[in-house]
Image (cartoon, rainbow, N blue to C red):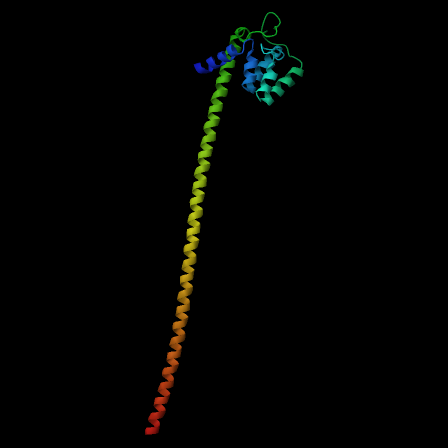
Length: 201
């Protein structure tokens, strides 16, 4: 069942723009699927002008829905297939009220409202999906920044450790050199002592 606010929105649109057909309203709102359904089933609606003197394609183009307008232009050039159920007993007159067009086919009216409700729900789901993707992207960027900071900290710590190791190696080399010099000096002193002792005896 369609939400009441969706039904009111469709009705208010037609009240605001008298003599607009359901095709006008759908084209104005950029509902391509509904426009295709209406224009294919009821091609007589395509050239209808509303009180503003605009067709559905002109209204769609004025609202920036270029794809919808081009779709209506293409369908207007195609031969009209025979309808399974006529929309009206008499040919459709220009500027026919939207309620008259939809009222002659309750199934179409119900389908139109259901389709618009579905489009609204899909648009809401798309907004939610985009928000979730943006949230995931922000979380990914945050984790990547933390990882980069941790990596930089690890590299800095590794560099400091390497510097300490190099310093210890230099200190060890200095100690070994000093120890070797001390051993050499001790050996010389022992040799001089032995020489003196030999002279005294």
